[in-house]
Image (cartoon, rainbow, N blue to C red):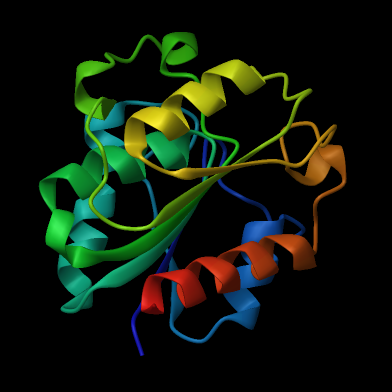
Length: 173
């Protein structure tokens, strides 16, 4: 069974966050730890994701949130043959963090799904949709769901698990 990398965004995902809930439910899930959860630096964060991919020794699944999506996409471009698929939830807008687009402009060569909300205070729906298009990802607008985090009522999130399981099934065909 392949490892599942949980890649949180800024501030990490606390114990009530849906990523922590999934981490506890899914066998072989493990969190990618960042050196500094309060300071975003795409190259540093992506290096941590690459290290976790390398440590797995086999292809991995990625479940990322917010800035963790950017770090995961950046890391995956350096390890394109090491990813089975990625669930990218509420991807951060790189412009909000002063991150260059060049490291994120490439189409992914594995199945991916971007899940976004139409009232996310951190990323506009049109921005999330644009990144999904650039990455060649399927796109799912889940309506008014905020940043899809604890603050917007997303602790346990069975729908998120269903999105991940659907991604796994579609990658197997």
